[in-house]
Image 1 (cartoon, rainbow, N blue to C red):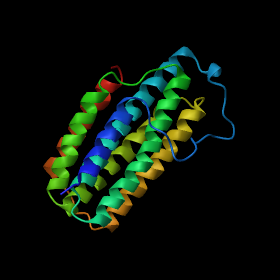
Image 2 (cartoon, rainbow, N blue to C red):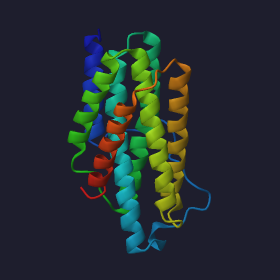
Image 3 (cartoon, one colour):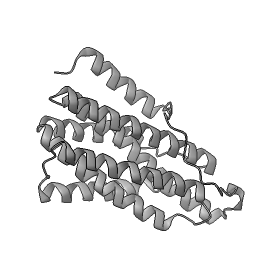
Image 4 (cartoon, one colour):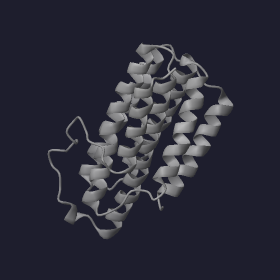
Length: 210
């Protein structure tokens, strides 16, 4: 069972995530040839803002998922693995938030809802057992990796700053999936994968605008 301190830490993480108080442990990725954002057209800026808002929502959900799965992990080793991945997701959260500020855009108005829903899903995955919880990580991260690849295809070429952030995020997500596989993940059933993809589509389409 999680300790009181772990519950308090989880609540503190939720508050920091939703109050824009996340701090990255790594420098924000920057390309060598970063162009000034003033070179972006209004249409390019709006597109980049919408895509980075969707990515920020994904990182809000990642904070909740990893926090819930760490709380329900059966072994100290798995708890530490979930917490380590969660810290890297905090970097992503801070980077996407900073990029939104630079683009003059905002985060999703529904972030508390996204966080609560993702936390509940993470608790369910964790309660199902460590191997299933790891399998959920693999499937989630593979879907996120594909989603980020699609954003790299859609982001304006002139927005090298956003592209650098998304590229590093994609690399980190792939490693998280590989680490979960190496720790003994059990593949989630096909209906669950379908539900996860369907939920992700609803979230991304909504967050693109709201």
